[in-house]
Length: 232
Image (cartoon, rainbow, N blue to C red; front, side, top):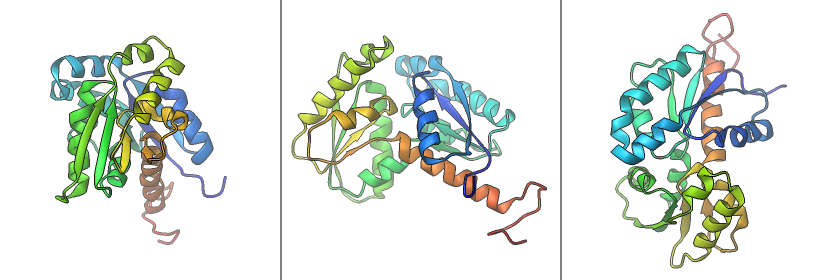
């Protein structure tokens, strides 16, 4: 298909539920982009129990596996370990992106931001990312932990989970933008009635990763000869 991105994107997930979500987004927005999914549920479980830094060696190994299997870039779809994945990118040989960075960049342009999460371990990495994207600009950050609903997601009750997140979002007041910190929450945005902007990460994160792969394919032709905009 003309204009379709070439190359393969590795995706590091911490839940198998993310696989069909990103497949659907690829089919809708980036036909021709190859996806290679690597699911490591143990990484989130350990990060929640011991902190994200505890899983750094395992994350580095997973990223190396994705690169060894032919990924041109790797997208970490778990916001809890996103910063760890970025930190492990040095020496890997392929770009590593975190799915929530584009979302955080958009949110950081607002003055009053509410970050909504269903697991506590996601809050601090998301807040740190928004502060980084704000680049020192003063922003008001508040958090809302929707407790007791992650178990619904883990048990496969997708509708119950999304409805609970949407209800919590609809209760937010005095904010300019609402951030859904986890990719698992993204579809709750369509179930809200709030007039406030509700940001989620999967679509914008995949768009950024596809852009990286497309740019790389334009610089190097299939024979390995450097090109730019189709010219040597």
